[in-house]
Length: 334
Image 1 (tube, one colour):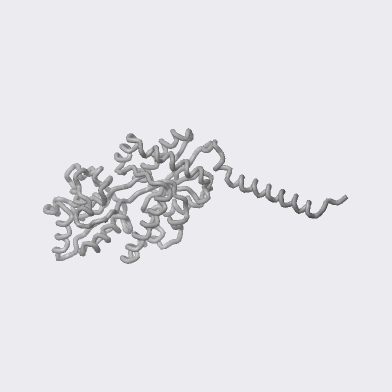
Image 2 (spheres, helix red, strand yellow; image 1 turned 180 degrees about the vertical axis):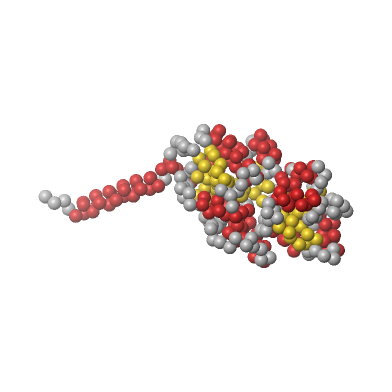
């Protein structure tokens, strides 16, 4: 006896539904797996060893290893202001075992190097911000002995018959872009002399070849403490944590100005939400630890936790702000 067609159709639909449920379950197996992580977790840093992003990644990786009970290693993939490592990272398996400590130089790298390797607004999942990296306008006090604050520097630049030179860690760096924005806001001129990295720029700043630099505080701090350089303005109030007593740019006539660079943990698109949420929760606890905060301060960074959604909005806002400046000024690394 043949079964009625309706019965067969019903059975087929139930079977198909069960298969679909299994497929969905397989696709979210990591999210439902309480054993994660059960093997080594890799954190990619798209910059050389020893820099603030690398140091922050290693400090955080150690704490995450302790809390998650699993080894986390840092792998450096430097090149082209972070774009090489970031472009490779976004193609990693989205299984919770591939993460990256994103640093802000990689934000505009595709624009500066004229490629479409990735878009920070949509090509990976923000997990949480980890640190802010304060910057400062620094001068050589032997070359500019009478300049002790930002308004005096601006007055000196306006009175100079030839443009005053300033440097940064490179073309398209946040020091470069920040000073270009400040020049527009203050109505003064200075000529950018780019270097490849903070170390050689600071060396020539100390030597007097270049009198002004918009610098990462971590690079300039030992020389400021030694009296070889003078900090005249911080990029934000957070610079005061490293340079007590310094006034910010905003406090010296430019309300709302904030030019800290920053970094945070990201994951490939498709990483299970439960894993992203777990990492976010762990980072919130870790970054509130005074011992870890002290270690980051020692590296020139300030612990700064923001959740995934806030980080996503911050990436979008900063991309809009800095890309406009780069385009308006025709700034390119090529």
